[in-house]
Image 1 (cartoon, one colour):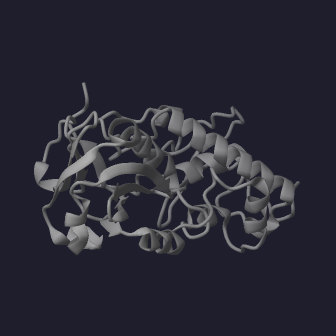
Image 2 (cartoon, rainbow, N blue to C red):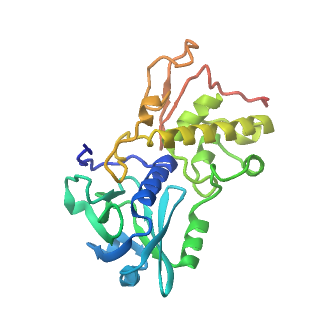
Image 3 (cartoon, rainbow, N blue to C red):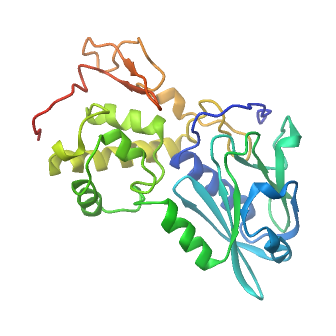
Length: 293
């Protein structure tokens, strides 16, 4: 039975895997369905395109795509195509009507459908850090260009290596910079860097091509594995059907301050406090100043 959703605080979730899980569930249950009604409970939840809401009535859901941490629903009718882009933000969720939800006052948008496996898709967002955007194709292209850099699951190794070779700064900050690499947030940045053996504050210009290539491989492995396990329901993420992501059971360092290193190196996981806390093993992820292979 789906969980009843109730959390009202957010800490940067969801990230790329969670957004991908959302997109896949919606695609499976609503692709091809026709919109019968659009209800918007408060105008300020729509960042752009509020006055185009009536266009979507009668349109069919043709595509569901993920861009970074956002989900874009593509609709078509006889007049063309438009998109509803959902920023999942810290506490934003796209939920099916069949998902039990406490605090229904936080449901700010409802899309009603016919011809799908679900009758309604709801945008639930208690803190309203995320928004919806109602866009045409040019608007969607501009939205993505402004917000998202390279997608780590779509880019080639050559593209990734070239991108990082042009950057300066701390590796963790670069991984989380959405206009550089789209979709990686604090949880997965910590997990990726531990698996690669890089200190969060390591300078990216110190990394060799070989190390960057390894980083590319591990990023894709971690993100793919997280998607297969439904994402990480650490605090606020639930899939549209109300299910929790189980990848949190496979976290090696995130939130594990004071616990022994899972590599059995004798180290203890430390927490480096800042705007976003970093979790790392000081032995496996030692800060090295010289260039490493």
